[in-house]
Length: 237
Image (cartoon, rainbow, N blue to C red; front, side):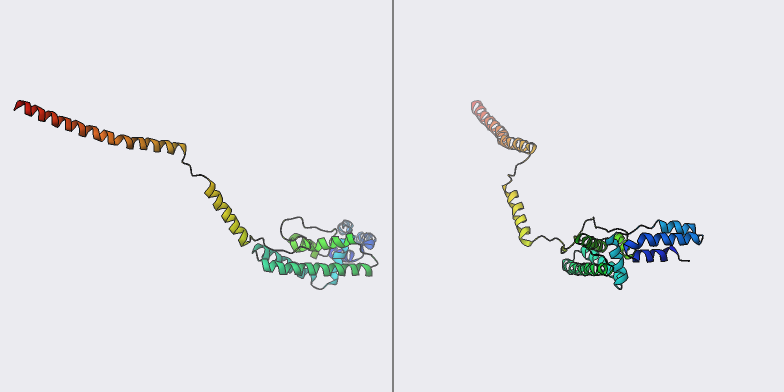
């Protein structure tokens, strides 16, 4: 008696228009063998969309495709984390070339199975493969070969379909312009002391102005005293 993995591999490898009939037959066979739990699990398997079926077919048709997707996805994320602009550009080109090639192969597989693959379905296949290269969790779903619906990467990063990836950089000219702008702003801004400091300066200046007068008063008084003593001595003599 087949187990769930064997049944699932057979169902998801078959054309989608055969899925329901084959699933029901497998569930019926499991019940006939007395395995009601297996029959229930088989009955719960979801029919794949055409795009998901094509991705599953690619995994069965292209040798080591799962390993290629995982390896390239890991390399892209590592290059992005390390801000390796040159590496990102090269890996982005590899990603685009791989996805384009796989979409073409998926169309051929569809034709071989009697299904015309229109542009909307082709775009779903493209988005699913691109998402698998961007998100490790989606990669696990895709490489299982039992995908039931297309996937799309909705996170942040440099994995927009069809666009090259490059770490953002600021041009030297922009840096210089920014520095000049900052310097000009500083030069134009008037240097003004706080009100409290200005008041303190005024107090100090007033004190400095008052000090000479205070010093002169004692000197004049001493001179007056000496002149008075001289006059008194002259009178006494």
